[in-house]
Every structure is written in structure tokens, then in C-alpha cells.
Image (tube, rainbow, N blue to C red):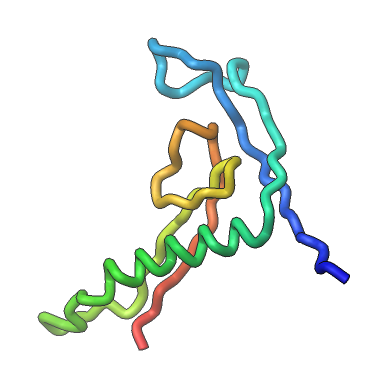
Length: 104
């Protein structure tokens, strides 16, 4: 028997194209619920976390009396299930999650 694919719903807000104002007013925005495969979200999140780990991998542990122990990133997930550090406008406004990379 085939496994049932699981999905998650993401609420996003989309604004009307407005060349005079980069940020639409609430009146210009509409909400939309997108259903995204959990496998797609897992793959996209794994990809962005791997890239962030690559970015911080070569950071020096300490150059002074202080050191970086923890780095926090707020990631945006858009209506298409794509993650980014800064939310894109192509798929409307997005939800955020925070991930923490801690030095071992």
C-alpha cells in the first residue's frame, strides 16, 4: 500500500501590483492558503540550513576575549514553500521561523 503524502497549509498575503508604493496597504492585500507537500518543505528547509551552515563553518571561534556561540536566523517561508532570509515579493508576504545554529 502506498504511503499517504502529507501536506501543510501556509497562509500568505498578496498585494496588488503598485508601482508607486512597494508596501501595499491592508485594503490592497488578499489572503491565500497554499497547500504544500511536507516533503517539499523538508527538502527546501534542509537545503537552506545546509547553505547557512556552509556560510558560518569557517567563522573563527575567537579572535578576542569574546566568541560567537550561537547564531540565530529568521527564515521566511513563502506561499510556494521556499525559504529565505529576506522574504520575497513574488509570492506575497510570508511566515517566518527562527533557527539557531550553535557551535559544538
